[in-house]
Length: 233
Image (cartoon, rainbow, N blue to C red):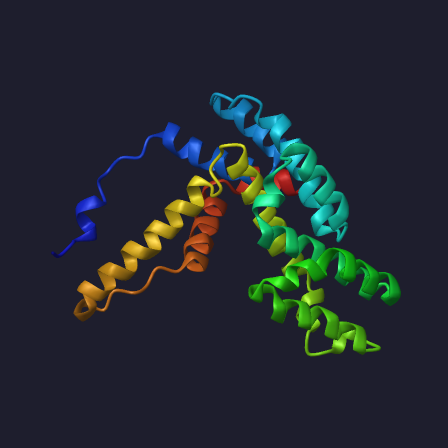
């Protein structure tokens, strides 16, 4: 079956739908002040307890991003007592973050003791064996940040674990683990790929999120130059 994307160009998207998509993204990423401003400026209905929920999640996520994984674990267990018990992968990653911070701080004896007490039980499961070997190997280097496992010290890794923790908490509290915007982008990418496969002869270009965002930024700048200048000032 062939699809013509031009058939969908005239489908109207209401302001309310757009507002809900944006609000979902802001709440998901814990942009509390922006959420408050957005609700005030659009008049959209505020979801129940959303601001309190943002405060709780934002605090936990910040501890994870700052490398204070034990505090993130403590607060997560207070908010969702059985979450980490059920999500072993996430629990392991958080414990690994603390181990890595101990190694980074040259507290190798403390790191080894922590690993023996908290990480070694995961060694009974084959899935974690290679990960544990990589972590333990860090202790053999005087400068572990320059070792073959240097990626374990990256901010990107902490951000990935923090985002996984955020999604897990959202799912645990019966909220969507992905924002509406993320789901739309995922669906758009899949549909666009399918269309390109079916209409390959027409030479349609693939969907690029980067180009899409750049185009939107250019359009917004052209439409609201004075507003943007005031905000920058």
